[in-house]
Each structure stands twice: as C-alpha cells, then as structure tokens.
Amino acid sequence: MIRVVNIWFGLLGLKTSKVRSALTILGVIIGVAAVIVIVSLGNGMKRFTTQQLEDMTSGTIEVRPGGMMGRYMEPVMVEYIGPGGEVVRDVKEGGGMMQPQRQPQLEEADVEALGRLATTVNGLSPQVEIYAPAIYKGERMPSGSIMGVTPEYLYVFKREMKYGRFVTAFDNAEAAPVVVIDEEMAKGVFGAEVDPVGEIIHISYQNVPQNYTIIGVLAAKGPSWGPTGNSLILPLRTVRVRMKQEAGSGVDFIAARVDSRVSEERQYAVAQINTILAVRRGIEPGTPEDFQVRDTLAYMEEQAQIINIMTLVLSLIAGISLLVGSIGLMNIMLVSVSERTAEIGVRRAMGARQADILVQFLSEALLLSLVGGLIGFGLGVLGSQIVGNLIEEMKGMVVVTADIITIAIAISSTVGVLSGIYPAWRAARLQPTEALRHI
Image 1 (cartoon, rainbow, N blue to C red):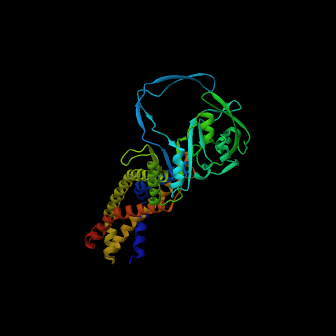
Image 2: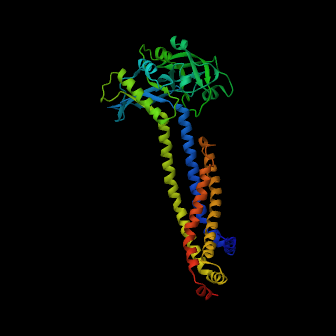
Image 3: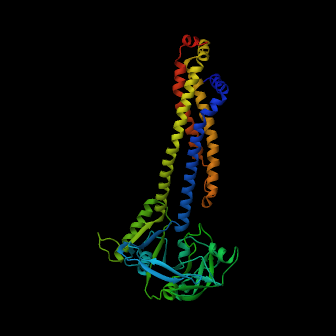
C-alpha cells in the first residue's frame, strides 16, 4: 500500500526547485499541446468532410456512364462574348492532352429496370446536366449548371422546400418552363427571407434565351456546392426538349436511395444494380461495363479513414517533442537523485524502505508530467479552437471529446512513469551507509 507521506515528500521536492520543475515540463507541455491540436483538428476535418459528403450525396448509390476512353485532342482557340460584352479568347479541348470521351450514356430504360427489379433500392432519381448562364433583371446569376430532374429527386436526396413547390410529374410530362433554385442562391440574388416564387429568370442555352418561372426554393442543406448548390433545377424533359432539343431518353446520372447503413447490405445493393444494368444493356460476363456504380457512403468512410491515417502520422511526428520532453524529464530526475543523496540516506536511516523511496521519486516525475499534460491540454484545446474558428467552413466542427481528454491523461501518465522509473529505481537502490556519507 502506498503511503501518503511518500507522495508528500515528492511534492516537497518539486517545491524546492520551482524553476527547474517549470523548465522540465516545458517539453511535455509542447508535446501534449501539439498532439491535442492535431487530433482535435483531425476529428473536426473528418466531421466536416463527412457532413459535406453526406449533404452532397445523402448517402446515395450513384450510377454514371463509365469506361472513360481517352482521345488525343489538338488545342483549339475559341472566342465568345462575355457577360460584359467583351470578347473572351480561350483554349478548348486539347492542349496536347488526352481528353475523356464518354461511352454510351444511360437510358430511362435503365431507370425503369432498376425501379422494377432492384429490391434493395428505395428510390431512383435520374438526371441530365448542362451548362448555361442564367440572367435576372440584367444581372448574371451565380449559376452555370442546369439540372434536369424528376419529382423523385426530392425524396432520394432527402430535401425539403423552403418556399413554393417542387417539379411535378405534370411539369415533366409537359416540359414546363419552370425552375427551382437553392436557398443560398435565393439569398444571394433576391435577399434573405425573400420569397422569389413567381419571378422570371432568363436562361440562355446555345445563344437562345428562354424565360423560366421560379416555382420553388429548396431549403438549405450543407454547403452552397451541395446536391444543388448554385445549380438551377428544371424538369428533366424540359432540359431535354427545350434546351438540348432532343427527343431521346438518355440520362447523365442516376441516384439510388438505399436507406440501409449496413455495409454488407449496401454492397449487395451495389452488386444488384451492377447485375441488373449489365443484363439490360447486354453486357457479356467478363466484358468491361460501360457504366460505373459507386456507393457514396463507402466513399465517405474511405475519406474518413484517410483523415484518420493522416492524423495518426502527424500525431506521431508531434510525439517527437514528447520524446524529447520525456528524456529531459529523466535527466532532471537523475540530477535530482544525485543532489538529494543525503536526503535519501536520512530517510533510509529513519526506517524508509526501498519502496518508499521509489514511490517518492516516481510520484515527483508523474506529478511533473501530469501538470505539464494539464497545461498542454489547455493550450491544445485553446489552439485548436482558434485554428478551427479561423477556417470558416470548420467553425463549430472542432470540439473536445472524451477520447481527446483520455489521450492527454494517457500521454502525461505514460511519459511520467517511463521518465521517472529509472531515476526512482536508482534512488531506491542507494544504501543508507553510502548515502549518509554525503551529509
């Protein structure tokens, strides 16, 4: 049983050399603070990345035209009229680089087959995408992306309306000239808490301006570049018929909602989607598929794992300062043992056991390390909050969790024990007669 008097002697030893004690724990303070900052920011980055990806994809399974083939393109100089009427010159498709060329696009028949046969899928949202400028009262809106969707989009991506309504099956069937915008875009163009439903905007595709009526505003979800971001949402057939002037049934992207979060069930869903599409598109076994299926939830987990590895590596690098601090602590404790040989001899002569001396010096090292760890923890939390607040996107993401507190205590205790065990052992091994010669 550890006697309190042994710990009391350890405290007295620290009190008699305040400056030395303060300098000794400096390395521990810096090391613990560095590890806390890195771990806190790593956790915040993981939380930020996961939230953004969740907001962007809502954990859907994505199907896109796949098998990107490269083709060599010579650089081509093009000219076009900019928003201010100026002539803009640019290099398009080329620059001596391999440019991607899509293989056959997805079809609405693919969506129909998935809806009929994919038992693991809870909803499907086909989309077409183009790029065209949008104008409101002579000013260009912060948008270049036009998304053609079906009414299922709202359910698949778990979105809600702020104002108005979403596109309906009737809008899609009639290729109605209507548009839905994101809340962030509405704030930027019309002002905060302003309902823009009924306003007319002009979308110019291939230099053909068209009028579209705003019928709804999607409630904000995540960053401005999330599932819609600065995109304009139109009925799918509206984009296809009024803009692309196509009567076909091609789609650029299919999002499948799978509510299960169990990895095995989602892997089965991916496999089922792959099989259904391969059969419908007549792809023979062993032949490369002309589409790609990706589970965004698995992708989020991969990104989180990458951040975990980066955090671990950076923490190990920061741990070098802890190693230096622990070596410094050990050296100071060895010096302390040498300078207090007489004190050790007196205690031994008065009946103190080797275990008492061991506990005394070990408690000194452990207390020094814990004090350093406590100060380092405070500085680390303060530093991580300052850095987190300096990064706009990470405000509120960097928080002190139980695992961070555990890390600080574990590091401090480990450094104290490992640094103090050898000096304490040497002090306990001193013979009373030999130690008393230093009086």
